[in-house]
Length: 439
Image (tube, rainbow, N blue to C red; front, top):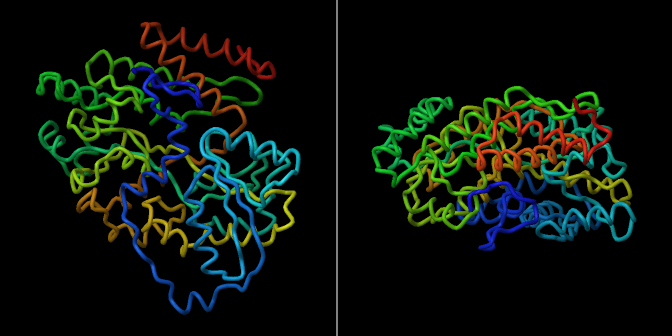
């Protein structure tokens, strides 16, 4: 399967999960693959200092790791019980929206995923947490991790506990053979721009007689660029950032130059390529790569390099329901996941990158993971995360981005020019969102 862009709920003929579906469930799988559970004992001072809370909370989510949050929150607060209801896959948003709209059996806290968070932040459902003091909670956050939870007035409506920076996951042995270096800084320097990447990719294909490719799929360029672009809608008008021309040209050059292995993400062959040595590097977020890597065969063989642009993929945010009768207790839960206590624990348990800068800096020179050998991956990811532009989501952006991705995939497959892709996007936006001015 070569077409990476599909509808959120579709599967390919082999039953492979599509990109957004995997992003929704992949964090838990990545945690199991990347990091063995590490017990973190609570000091007596922490336990004694814990606020004595009591009550019952209901949390709805699509993300199974929220159960770990709940367990730790209850351990710190023995008088509280937390009921976490996990609705996997695409059914979650539908169930969540219906419950919030009808006030029937609605949760106290509900999760919002990056792909649709923009549709809810200005709705009547999430509590204004800025009014509860949340600005202090996120003061030390990576800027983009805070921005994604703000409404159009700048108020905090949802809070995350982690960040999702992305880089190039690369095989050290293949990098040494075909790039001449395997150190993360040296590899990052070699792939700092797309012209260099394309030139390197041609060399890799030539030296290996076409058996090894630098990249798995040209769509890495799209993924890396997608959140560095201008918003899709500005003052009610469709806004196509002119830099998309360069991204589309890059994708076309990757494919034409034999730089990629033509393996669509989540296809069986793409999954196998993580372990069979046929692809040098993958553009992928911090939490997701271990889903596909055999941890026994991959130990010490992988590194993380910076991509041409700092980028992220995904994001899970907690919001408090305005109809909840437990808002005060729900906010205590949000305070807990925004704390260094939880984010340090979560890092060691799951390898989810923190949202707090202080957790990055306190661990960046010491934290090690067997998969990456001696590399201090937090230092790499902190540098990436700090460079990501902090932009608020809106109700149109993700859908337009997904639509454009499908159009671009068709364009490259059929050899159409960039202008045809932009024209097709305008037509689809005008049809689906008549309130948006298209020119």
